[in-house]
Image (cartoon, rainbow, N blue to C red):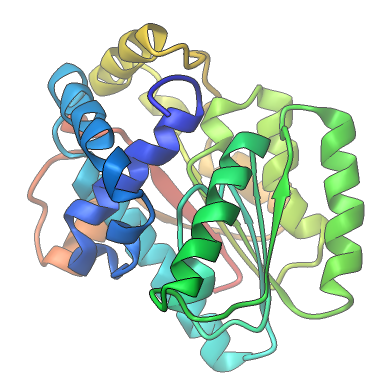
Length: 271
């Protein structure tokens, strides 16, 4: 758990667990089994010292925005099902009244998520949900094609909300564009995509993150996109939410300027 791309999922979970009220995720503290929690906390503290100490703020606000946007869609159309790429330990199917969800991540991450979801459901800490966990290498073109075929069959004509969270910047440029476009290919009524804007490639926090990634066997190449490019991929206008925007929305002020943060923006289409 403390190296490779999977390590980022554990870091993200620890960030939400530190600010569960802000994240709107009371399940966050349960996803990591207690014997493993000290290792994850230590990993987070190391990352905070080497990269930046605000990942709890950035991740919690990102998740809160996505959760609230999905909630509004479900209020308007309760039949909507979720497709989430980069699911990690996010808990949207259990935080929202969804009838079904398809969660996609790397096979090792999916195995850990499926196992833990079963344990938490059996313990009464998660409600029963119809969640399909699918292990996919989203940098593999054949795997993406198979995923699209599977997801279309799984959705079976139901309205879809599509989330690509915390992953497109870890993919090659072509893969990032195609993963963003999966929602359009599925006919999603709502798309939510988190990304790093093209004009933030020289961000100092990202430079520190790349250096730390190299020590943990996480690829440090990244894809950067403009809002116009995302709009073109999705085929419709998008609304952009920066880290400062979501601070204003949920905190009433900008407590940490974007220059001191990982500059993860969220593009929303169809809200």
